[in-house]
Image (tube, rainbow, N blue to C red; front, side, top):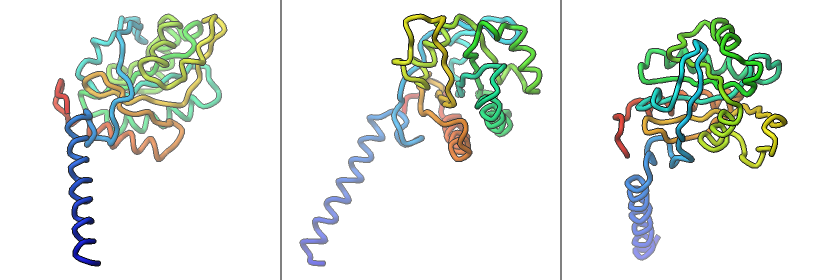
Length: 208
């Protein structure tokens, strides 16, 4: 390569490195898991498997995974929650890590029903929380806050609406949704674990 060619090559390398560092400073978390936040969590109010209120204040400063399922599901939910239990087993020693499992079917999944399901999972329900509540509120959180289902799926009649998704949202300490994962794919489950471990190293309240 000629001297001029090397000069051009060096110039573009410096330009690319400079561009990377600009992105790293401007985009929160760019160097963490490679993407900017896709959304942020709006205020919510649900009820736990123990009948206690649960709001966005209960996840402040935490890293957590949000999923949707229903206790009588015979399709994707059993496999999805078996995969989510792998995440739980890997990260349960992290005091700032949570899993939120929201029901898609609150009419069936009452507090006692969620408690029965939670007990069958044999997990610490202070760390893996099972949530029920108003159907419209649950669905709005899934589609607007967590972006794990397309808002255009929202029907005019909430009674006729039904949400069934295998996607999970990973939320950082600042309440930003960092990435969406397919809970049925082993490779993405492993990726989520690694990404959650990185986010857990962040200082609460720090914007990167």
